[in-house]
Image (cartoon, rainbow, N blue to C red; front, side, top):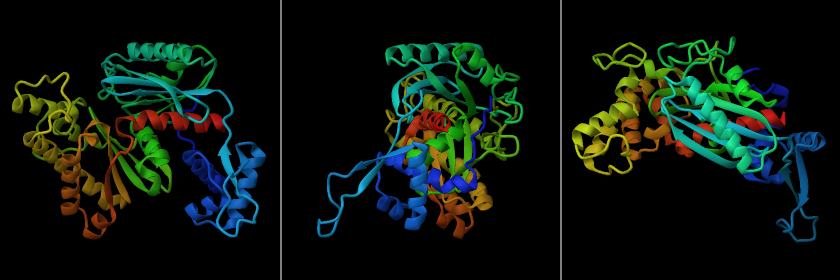
Length: 387
C-alpha cells in the first residue's frame, strides 16, 4: 500500500545504475558500461555477475567483432530480461487524465487521454481512469497488470497516503488514492501514488534530459506549477512527501486570485490558464478552449511567454541560490511552448542567482515534453514490478 518512491540501498546502487543503463540503451557490453560510468572493470563485472545470477539481464553474443586484430572472442551484449506482468500508469493533471499500459520493461503498449476537471471531480476521474485501463488491457491482450503508478497534481502525505490540501485538490482532500484505485480496478494489483512532478522528474531522469545530470530541478509548468528535486539520481520529496509546491510562492505586488485561496501565487500569474486569459485579450479571434501556444507563433505571444518565463525564473533563481542544481528542466505545456519562455527563465536566473551558481546551471526543456509524467509513471511501475 506504499505510495513512495523507493530509494535504492547504497550497497545496491551500482547494480541498479548499471541495470537502468542497459535498460535505457536496449543493450550494452561490459566495456560500454565502464566507459559510460567511469567505474572500474572489476566493479562492473561484479555487478553484472549479480544481475545475471538474479535473472534481470541476459547475455547474447555480439555478431560483430570488436576493435583489434579480429582474432579475439566476440564481445557479449547484455539485455534486460522482460519478466513479470504488464504495468500501467495514470497521469491525473488538473484538467486531464492520461492512461497507459506497458510491458514489463515499462515500454508503452497503448494509451488514451481525456480532458476532465480532475480537481473538482475526483471520483469521476478515477472511475474513468479505471475504465480506460480496462479498455486498453482488452485492446492489447493484457491478461494481468502487476503494478500501477498514478500521479496526481497535489500533495500526498507519504506517512498516511492521504491527499492533504483542500484548496489545491478540493474534491480529493482526505481521500487515499491508493485504496480508491485498488477498489476500482478490482483485480490484485500493486498500486503506488506520487505527486505528478515527481514522476515527471523520474521520467526525465531515466530516459530524458536528466540522464546526464545527477542533480537537477524538474519544473512542471502547466495548469499548475510544481517542482521535484533530484539529488544524486534520487527524487527528494521532503519529510512528509509534499516538497516542491513552488506554485504557491508569493509574488510581491501581485493580486491575482489563486486556487489555494491566496492572492499573488506564482501559478495564478504563470500557468496555462493565466496566459490563455492574456491571449484572449491579445487575440480576440482565437478560441481559448482549443488554441495552443504552438499555433500562436507571433511576436505578441512570444512576448507573453517570455515575460512568464522571467517571472518563473525569478522564483527559480532563489531556488538555485539555495540548492545549486546542475540543471533546471522545464516540463508541462509551458515547457513545451518553445524558446521564448525558456529564454525568459534563463534571463532572470542569470540576473538574480549568484554568478557562479547561474553559470553552473543548464536550463533545458523536458525532452519528453508533456509525456514526462506518464513516462515516469511507466518506468517507476516497471522498476517496482521488477523488484
